Image 1: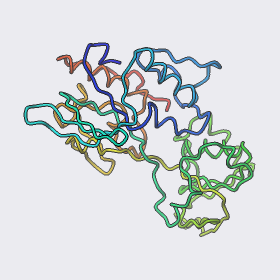
Image 2: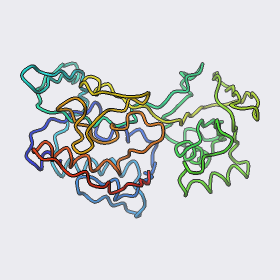
Image 3: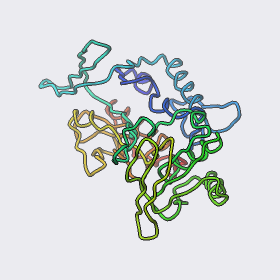
Image 4: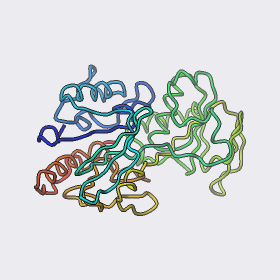
Length: 325
C-alpha cells in the first residue's frame, strides 16, 4: 500500500495465501498484541467484543485491506531465483502452478517473516503423525493424553486451551519452573493455579529423549529429575520457530550468527546487498528470544518508502518500543 500510495510500480509475490503464517494458528487464537498495535496501512482494526483480535478476525482484516486499496498480490507464486543483472536491477523467477515465470525489478523488498517452520525436537520419533507443532482444533484432543513440550507463552496457552477442551494435559519443560518473565501476565496466574491443583501435570527439569507411537521417554536436564516414560496419545512441541532466510541468501544479503541475522542500514532498511531492503520480522532472522514483532516493524515501511523516493528518513523512535507480543 505504501508503494502504491506513492506511485511506485510494484510486484508483490507470496508463496502461499495472504496472511498464511497466521492462517495456521489454531481456531480462535487471539493475538497477544492490542488491536491498534497490529493495525496496518492506517486502517483501524475493530472487533465486535472490543477484545484482542482472533486469528479469524485478523485474516478478515487483511483481506479487507487488500480489497480497500485494490492491492495486487500474486499468491501461491513462490520466488525461486533472484539474480543481479549486469545492467542493474534484478532478475526474479517465480513458479505459478506448473509454469515458471521471469520478472525484472530495480529494487527488492523482502518481508519474509521470522516464523516459517516450527522448531523440531530432533529426537527419534519426532516425525510421527501424532507429534504436532501445528495442533489445529482443541476439539481433536478431547479425552486424549497430550504432552505439551515447552514453557513459554505458546506452550502455556496451548496447555490451557487443550485442558479446557477436555484433554489430559501434561507439560514438559527443561527448567525447574516456568519462566514468569516470559509468560504474559494474564496467562501466568491461571497456569500456576492449574498446576498447583494437579489439573495439568508438569515434568520440570526434563526433556524429550525419544517418542514412540504410545509413549515418550523423558531424560533429566539436571540432577533433580529422573528418567521417566509416560503414555501419550499426542505430543505438541511449542519450542519456537525458525526463519526461512533462503531469499535473503539468494539476494546476496550477509547473514550473521546461528540465527542468520541479516545486516542492514537501520535508517533505510537497505540490506548489505545494494537495492535489497528488509521489512518486518525478517530483520531478526531466527529469534531465540523474540524482540521483533508486527508492532515494532511498522516504521520499516516508511523508511523504505522514503529511501525509494530518494530521501533518507530520520531514524525515529519506534512507537511501540515495549511490545505486548
